[in-house]
Length: 149
Image (tube, rainbow, N blue to C red; front, side, top):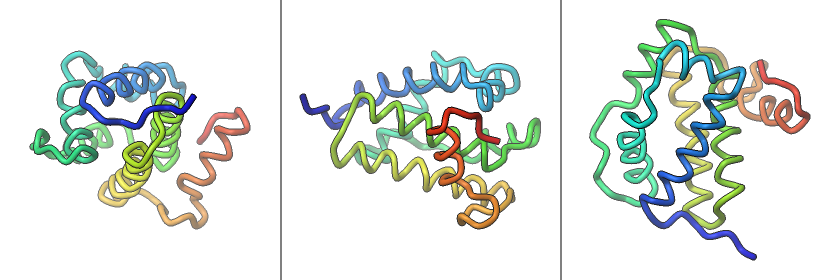
Protein backbone atom coordinates (compact mmCIF):
# COMPACT_ATOMS: atom_id res chain seq x y z
CA UNK A 1 0.00 0.00 0.00
CA UNK A 2 1.37 3.39 -1.01
CA UNK A 3 2.01 5.99 1.65
CA UNK A 4 0.13 9.30 1.31
CA UNK A 5 1.92 12.54 0.61
CA UNK A 6 1.83 15.47 3.04
CA UNK A 7 -1.24 17.47 2.05
CA UNK A 8 -2.41 19.31 5.15
CA UNK A 9 -1.51 21.04 8.37
CA UNK A 10 -2.83 17.99 10.22
CA UNK A 11 -0.34 15.77 8.37
CA UNK A 12 2.48 18.10 9.39
CA UNK A 13 1.36 18.28 13.01
CA UNK A 14 1.21 14.49 13.29
CA UNK A 15 4.64 14.11 11.73
CA UNK A 16 6.09 16.82 13.98
CA UNK A 17 4.69 15.16 17.11
CA UNK A 18 6.35 11.88 16.10
CA UNK A 19 9.57 13.65 15.20
CA UNK A 20 9.78 15.50 18.51
CA UNK A 21 9.05 12.29 20.44
CA UNK A 22 12.10 10.76 18.75
CA UNK A 23 14.19 13.93 19.08
CA UNK A 24 13.48 14.32 22.79
CA UNK A 25 14.56 10.70 23.38
CA UNK A 26 17.67 10.92 21.21
CA UNK A 27 20.89 10.85 23.25
CA UNK A 28 22.65 13.36 20.99
CA UNK A 29 20.03 16.07 20.44
CA UNK A 30 17.47 15.25 23.09
CA UNK A 31 19.24 17.15 25.89
CA UNK A 32 19.21 20.32 23.78
CA UNK A 33 15.42 20.12 23.66
CA UNK A 34 14.69 18.80 27.14
CA UNK A 35 17.43 20.19 29.40
CA UNK A 36 18.82 23.29 27.70
CA UNK A 37 15.86 24.76 25.80
CA UNK A 38 13.30 23.08 28.08
CA UNK A 39 11.00 23.02 25.08
CA UNK A 40 7.29 22.92 25.85
CA UNK A 41 6.07 20.97 22.84
CA UNK A 42 2.44 21.98 23.22
CA UNK A 43 3.43 25.65 23.17
CA UNK A 44 6.02 25.23 20.39
CA UNK A 45 4.11 22.94 18.04
CA UNK A 46 1.73 25.53 16.53
CA UNK A 47 4.64 27.80 15.60
CA UNK A 48 6.82 25.07 14.11
CA UNK A 49 3.80 23.72 12.25
CA UNK A 50 3.29 27.25 10.87
CA UNK A 51 6.90 27.19 9.69
CA UNK A 52 6.60 23.87 7.85
CA UNK A 53 3.15 24.68 6.51
CA UNK A 54 4.51 27.90 5.01
CA UNK A 55 7.54 26.15 3.55
CA UNK A 56 5.77 23.12 2.11
CA UNK A 57 2.14 24.03 1.52
CA UNK A 58 2.84 27.62 0.49
CA UNK A 59 0.76 29.28 3.19
CA UNK A 60 1.81 32.50 4.87
CA UNK A 61 1.28 31.22 8.40
CA UNK A 62 4.85 31.61 9.66
CA UNK A 63 6.11 35.07 10.42
CA UNK A 64 9.18 34.69 12.52
CA UNK A 65 12.92 34.33 12.71
CA UNK A 66 13.83 30.66 12.88
CA UNK A 67 17.50 31.46 13.49
CA UNK A 68 17.00 33.49 16.70
CA UNK A 69 16.03 30.65 19.06
CA UNK A 70 18.72 28.41 17.59
CA UNK A 71 21.33 31.14 18.06
CA UNK A 72 20.28 31.48 21.71
CA UNK A 73 20.46 27.71 22.15
CA UNK A 74 23.87 27.64 20.44
CA UNK A 75 25.13 30.31 22.85
CA UNK A 76 24.06 28.14 25.80
CA UNK A 77 25.32 24.83 24.39
CA UNK A 78 27.10 24.88 21.03
CA UNK A 79 25.37 23.10 18.17
CA UNK A 80 27.65 21.23 15.78
CA UNK A 81 27.25 19.44 12.45
CA UNK A 82 26.49 16.18 14.25
CA UNK A 83 23.48 17.78 15.99
CA UNK A 84 22.06 19.12 12.76
CA UNK A 85 22.84 15.86 10.99
CA UNK A 86 20.89 13.92 13.60
CA UNK A 87 17.98 16.38 13.31
CA UNK A 88 17.88 15.76 9.54
CA UNK A 89 18.10 11.99 10.03
CA UNK A 90 15.25 11.89 12.52
CA UNK A 91 13.06 14.16 10.38
CA UNK A 92 13.68 12.03 7.29
CA UNK A 93 13.05 8.80 9.19
CA UNK A 94 9.80 10.20 10.60
CA UNK A 95 8.58 11.18 7.15
CA UNK A 96 9.73 7.95 5.49
CA UNK A 97 7.59 5.95 7.90
CA UNK A 98 4.40 7.93 7.19
CA UNK A 99 4.49 9.76 3.88
CA UNK A 100 5.74 9.57 0.30
CA UNK A 101 5.40 11.96 -2.61
CA UNK A 102 6.65 15.28 -3.93
CA UNK A 103 5.77 17.37 -0.85
CA UNK A 104 7.38 14.78 1.40
CA UNK A 105 10.53 14.81 -0.72
CA UNK A 106 10.55 18.61 -0.54
CA UNK A 107 10.24 18.39 3.27
CA UNK A 108 13.28 16.11 3.44
CA UNK A 109 15.33 18.29 1.09
CA UNK A 110 14.26 21.43 2.97
CA UNK A 111 15.45 19.97 6.27
CA UNK A 112 18.94 19.52 4.87
CA UNK A 113 18.98 23.06 3.43
CA UNK A 114 17.83 24.43 6.80
CA UNK A 115 20.50 22.48 8.67
CA UNK A 116 23.28 23.69 6.38
CA UNK A 117 22.05 27.30 6.53
CA UNK A 118 21.78 27.23 10.33
CA UNK A 119 25.28 25.81 10.70
CA UNK A 120 26.72 28.43 8.40
CA UNK A 121 24.89 31.28 10.12
CA UNK A 122 25.99 30.01 13.52
CA UNK A 123 29.56 29.97 12.22
CA UNK A 124 30.12 26.29 12.84
CA UNK A 125 32.41 24.10 10.81
CA UNK A 126 32.37 22.56 7.39
CA UNK A 127 28.94 21.98 5.90
CA UNK A 128 30.02 21.07 2.40
CA UNK A 129 30.92 17.42 2.86
CA UNK A 130 34.64 18.02 3.42
CA UNK A 131 36.43 16.76 6.52
CA UNK A 132 33.37 17.36 8.71
CA UNK A 133 31.19 15.09 6.60
CA UNK A 134 27.99 16.94 7.60
CA UNK A 135 24.94 14.84 6.68
CA UNK A 136 26.49 11.99 4.68
CA UNK A 137 28.71 10.85 7.56
CA UNK A 138 25.87 11.17 10.05
CA UNK A 139 23.58 9.16 7.80
CA UNK A 140 26.17 6.37 7.62
CA UNK A 141 26.47 6.37 11.39
CA UNK A 142 22.70 6.24 11.88
CA UNK A 143 22.31 3.43 9.34
CA UNK A 144 25.02 1.42 11.08
CA UNK A 145 23.32 1.82 14.44
CA UNK A 146 26.03 3.84 16.16
CA UNK A 147 25.62 7.35 17.55
CA UNK A 148 26.71 10.34 15.50
CA UNK A 149 29.24 12.73 16.94
